[in-house]
Amino acid sequence: MGRIIQTGGGTLRKISAIRAWGGIAPTLFTLAVALSVPPFACVWGVRWLLGGLHGVRHLHIRVLPLLAVLSALTFAGILLLGGDDITSRLGHRTVWSVGLSVSTWAFALFSVLGFVAAVRVRRSEVNRWVFLHSLVASTVFCMATVYLARFGVIGLRTWV
Image 1: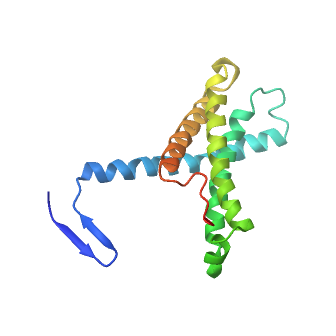
Image 2: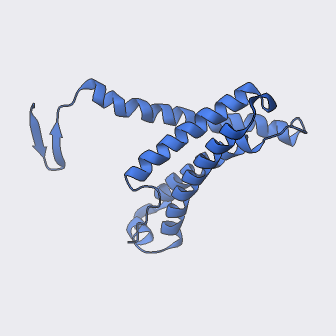
Image 3: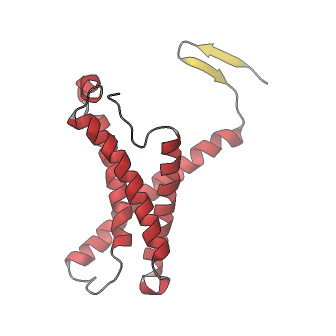
């Protein structure tokens, strides 16, 4: 079985490198995909503002992954901006704690909607790279949603 180390913070035990990297690699991949969405949005956002996307169909497959990332950033922002008084802000039903819960539901909703939109669109009607990026991002975000839901993060109610 191996050695077990008891510390004040918990119990530690040796695991295989495959098991360790099996958790680290998907997290890094999800982070890389999430980090690719805002620059991608800047490119098509500028083109849209300048009229370069006039007549382009299915803009929603570009927008939905961005909304998922923004909702995840909202979640992180609420936690970071909680400040010194985070217990009173998140321990009771406040704008902060409800916002935290809503941001998790928004991430799940935009992830699923993005995946459905990417799967339903005809590849011939969308640029190949736009389609591929939206499909990969939405798929990864859906997998992250399932993972987060499994551990109770989606719909997190800190005031209960």
